[in-house]
Image (cartoon, rainbow, N blue to C red; front, side, top):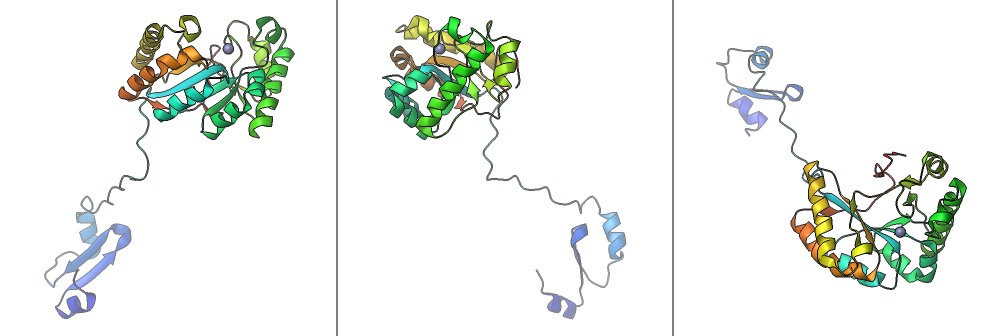
Length: 266
Ligand SMILES: [Zn+2]
């Protein structure tokens, strides 16, 4: 750039109008004054396009964020489960039972400390008790939350009723329990890992088949698994394949729109 004083000395006139994106250097032969110049070249004087903010991570592709969930824990084999998650650099959400948390408090602490999601699965896991009444269901979730709070110092509002919310977690139940600020989470991929146990090939195919089906509608998978020894066998292969297919792994939070069988968005 020619310094102002020098340019004046050389016979140039400089005009600078930042609001019009104009820096004009002219000699005596210029035919247009600045106003006429701006109006003639207004297309060329468009503001520059804002630069892409480089610091933001690329937005997650629709349907490519996956939520692993483990029910019924913690268990004696939770540390091995967490080791596998860490090896693959992924997090999961754990819907835990109060009595199991009391039995394995150090597992609960590790689940929380390593940044996994925390959810409630009740106290008894017995249909006739949990679903006896809306108040009974609420009492189980509150009791479970008390245990979680005692161990980790923090509670949660994420719940998954035993056996999933359909058919028993009816509107009366939901009004009572969700009315207290809880958020209801079921799943859209059922691994059936409780049924197939050590048959990891069948569990693998069951999960991948449902995940690929959801991919067609760009729906993020919420996968139901269990915190049990048998599931450890299938997990590494499953995580390896899902990562290779470009899935990223998220934890469920209270701010997300809940996925549940009743489409209850509370
Ligand atoms: Zn369960």
